[in-house]
Image (cartoon, rainbow, N blue to C red):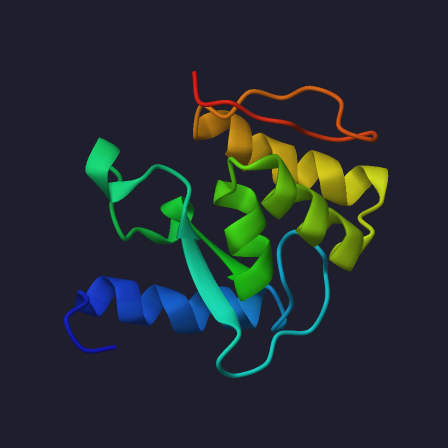
Length: 113
């Protein structure tokens, strides 16, 4: 990827192989153009491009992971129909992003803290 570090590009390939081409949250196969690499610790907060700081996810899951508006969250929750394990996998990085967790039909709702 142009404009990204060599480490980032190497880790993208390694993550794809390690995750068997599947989204870390939903477990669904990823397709070209729909793959996003989420930094567990944001680069703005001192995160880096190390393998341990990246996770491979679906583009729409990435939108949901960062969503703060109830309408957006509701839309994507309906779209994915996540089970409890998937919701837990989604809530962990949301918590790291300081998005509050509470019940929203069994899930999350949010305000920035």
